Length: 159
Image (tube, rainbow, N blue to C red; front, side, top):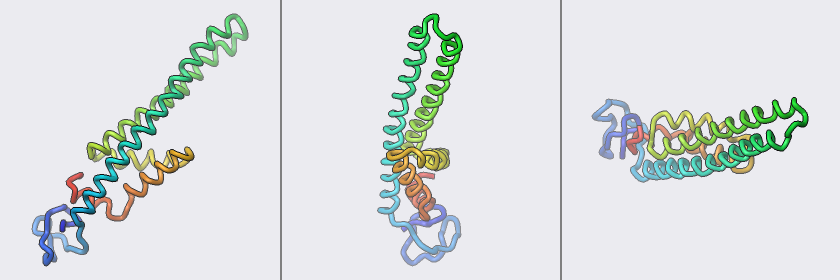
């Protein structure tokens, strides 16, 4: 058994944590902490895989924007001037989303402290991208906002 506050190993009959002095209300079993660490690893892998798919539209938009300049030739000057920067802007947006997701996935797998909050924010934003983004967003929020998540992180040595 482990303390919910600091993660110190406890004897079953302890009422107070010997390290931090907090009252023992409930305890975290090592198997629960290991299961939570497994969820974090799975979540990290899913973020990396799904974010890698955001690279495809980024490269596609860059290619189309670049090709449009040559296909337009001496045609409409307004379209020839406007379309490539718009395509580049959209491509840059997709590239930023992909990089953010890959960094969050790596951070979750490495148990970085900043990755939890960033994953929660990106998980909320992912809810509006059905079907895979919605599933990943729900799974992210379920894992990271579970009522014992902080205790599991401390018990597993993740914080």
